[in-house]
Image 1: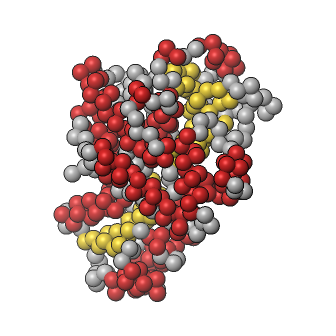
Image 2 (image 1 turned 45 degrees about the vertical axis):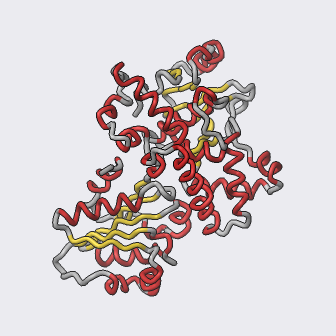
Image 3 (image 1 turned 120 degrees about the horizontal axis):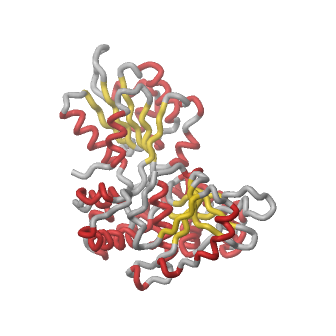
Length: 394
């Protein structure tokens, strides 16, 4: 059985009264993760209950009043401790009230582990009244380490991010890296061996599940939501709502609202500029990256092998961003760019700078001399295809 890295963190949180709230994009495996925990805890003699709010009958009962939970789960005595799993909590009319009601009355007896498909719903429906009552756990698509585990190559994982990979694994790792760069880390995509089927699964995720985000958010133009994702997949560099709006004949404020939903639904991330010189360095315009490379390539309509791609540099840069996401908070990941278009791809924790080039030969040191002289306290690194998995992070 394949376990996500988050599995252990959730087990460690079982002894805390706080609600364990699992969020993430659709199809990243939240339901599977909870079912695995449920089975494991049952096997250890724990009293557990699993509720899916995709069941309209159960949803209707619980929406009527929080105490109706006792009509859904079997009775339990005053001395017993139960673990309650609730899947797709965002479907409730007032999830905050439901969770607060049971936390305040029963947290000594009921440990709640809850999933929600999108941070948009968490932002919208989860009021401040849950402050201190929940801990949020984000489940992204598979990291590269998790990808290797799902490929039954656990023995290689300790060498990733170690700074030293044995030569015996290099060729194999390059093969896996090529697959990850093309098809990303959605669990169903990774477990599928047929290339055509991988593409069809990504199509379904994009055209069905992602579009569902737009429909459930009551966006006026749900098709435009997908159009913006397509535009973002093929644009290099800075995010500009006005430019996208002009291309789609939309107001830039509408574009911005749609892009915020994409962030809250965990499909893209924006990073902001690092600056200290207010007049010469960029301060406002962010850069956009996809949180999953397979999704990026689907919207780009390009699954060509890496060697044949014109965008292989941008693809590797997006992979590096995805790696950074596993180790750092989003506000610790920045980029540097001047009004004269001098640029460094990533500034991490204001202490390390990283420039990404697909080939080491294409790196021109003189282009980065100005940055290194301006910020000598920031250590500069070059990342390329040959060293990207050897990099020490965290």
